[in-house]
Each structure stands twice: as structure tokens, then as C-alpha cells.
Length: 99
Image (cartoon, rainbow, N blue to C red):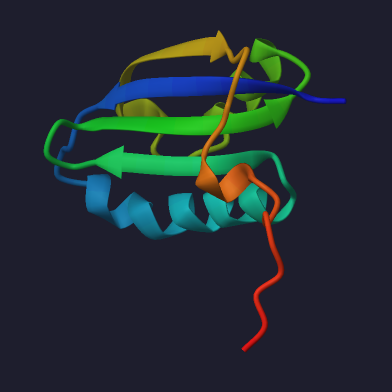
């Protein structure tokens, strides 16, 4: 069974940055489809991002991130193993609703 890790990162936006967004999103979509990534969030306001990964190790996350065309724009990142991840989208329905 895979562990859950939270990657948080800071990034910089430079002139070429926007040209790499589409190929980066393609990679993220592939990771989501393959259940490597559960959640992906980015704030352009604060230039920060958060990703929840399903993987065996922090080293695998670094390997995944190095594949991103935006990797060179990351100023720093931190990877933490999660003990708990909970929320409304992670719950089973409590009752069957019929229309």
C-alpha cells in the first residue's frame, strides 16, 4: 500500500514560464489518471503549490517532479509524509438518496 505525501513548493514566474504550463498540466493529468497524484493546487497570488502524492518514498516524488517542464522554476519544495488526510470527498456516502 502506498503512503501519502504532501509536496509544498514555491515557484517563480519568468518570461518563458507560461509556455511550459500546458505540457506540465499534461504530465499532472497523467499522474492523476494513474493515481500517483490525489490533489493538485496552485496559487498564482502567492506563487505556491501543493500536491498530495501516493507513492512509496520521497525520492519517488523528486523523480516525478524532475519530469515537469516547470521543474527549473521551483524555488524550493518540501515533502512531508501525511499521517491523516480527511475531507468530504474522501468519505463514503452515509445514505442512499433516491430521486
